[in-house]
Amino acid sequence: MNEILLTSILLALIVITVILIKLLINYARLAQSYKALEETMQRNNEDIAGLSAAGVKVDERLNEIYQNQQHFNVKLSQVEEMSANVGGATQANHKIIQRINQGAGVEELMVECGVTRDEAELFLKMHRSE
Image (tube, rainbow, N blue to C red; front, side, top):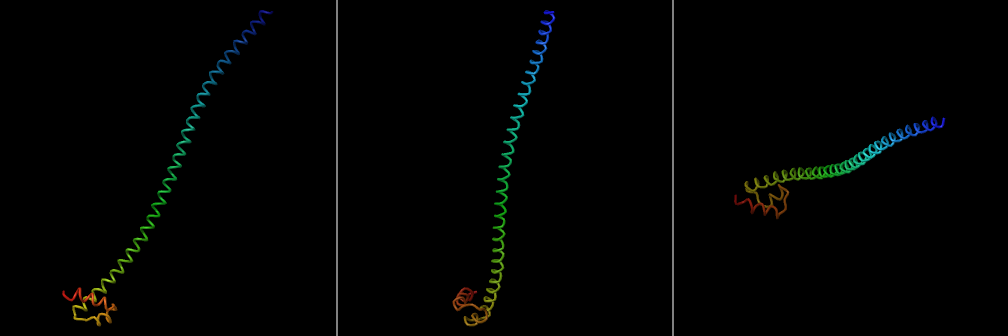
């Protein structure tokens, strides 16, 4: 009876040892898988952080471009306004030159064209010789 009991215990120990070895092998595989997943997760977190930082930079750059566009729109409006004013001044200058060519003097230019005496004299000096 002791032999049977001893053989049973020995067989049970062998079975337990085999199960324990299989569990250790599975644990080692799981540990490797866990480590690989952890490394992948770390890389993904770094990628997400990089993308977020890049997104912030893109947003900052777009905001800068938008502000520049607004600035250029204001400048364009000013240039267009100045251009319109210059066009009006050119027409006024043309009228003054026409009157000079027709023989108008300083007094006539002052009254008809609304210029100062100095401006009328300057126009006469510049355009009388034409």
